[in-house]
Length: 359
View 1 (tube, one colour):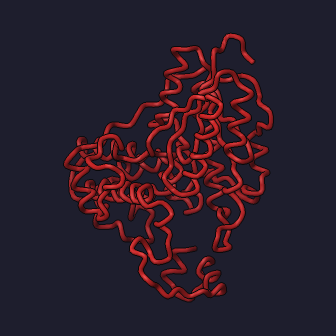
View 2 (cartoon, one colour):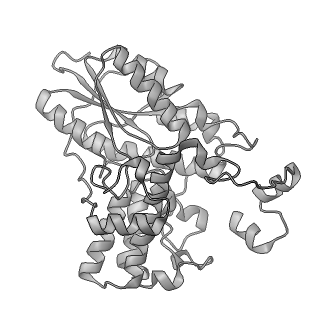
View 3 (cartoon, one colour):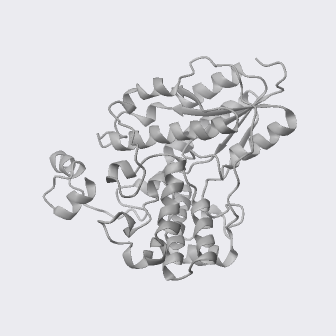
């Protein structure tokens, strides 16, 4: 333990694998600069990342695992520039964070909230454990374009229809600019028990047989184009807006399925938080100010609002979102055919458009 360090600012990274527009990291580093605390950025490879879903299929296939690993590598590189890289662990999230808090001095744990059922279950367990042992936690609203504290409705009163949701948040103007990355932090310099390295993580079953793409240019093969990480996400944003002006044609081309620039293709980076929705919206608004503002530029912000809407719906309805009858619990006759399901998963249904999309 470093005698000069007063405490430890533990930042738990989840689906927010970036350093810019990251409230837990930004504020933890700001507190550490005042108190002399060390920074400890943590990523936990938890059991729910692997294994099978309730439908019997794998939770993560090789392409997503590759993208995730590349995102971890890039996050480590960016954090290292600020002071120290990510600290990697395997195991149950609450158990791992509990052990970390026992090992470091005066910990404070910071993280973004998530909205889905399994993630919220982990959060409840963690917050209960931290409270039991008097460990401070700083919990931040889900990372959406909308500022949760500024929307003109409570979560239970979130509109059930997108159009009403959109009009209310657009009228209120609830979009603050993205946060900058922290300037630096003093890393916790001692290796912790059960800590792993990136090469060790690469050998974990989740990441076996996942090659790492080298070419991030949009002209490369599609699997190589979808490279995980902050840099690749920012490169895609720059390419789609500034290098090609493809954004200015988005509304006309967005339903195309063949060309890489038919649509933004930002979803994968947004899903793991390599690029935040606020960051994407901010860049679109800068493009509107400097290049062109038209229906297409608005429409990308419109689609990002759809993303926010579904995040709010998930927070509001929880597991009901996944009921077989939908939110209205309508009676639906589902076909339980394992062979047909596997054919769909592999893109071998015999329906050309669907098969091509899945593959």
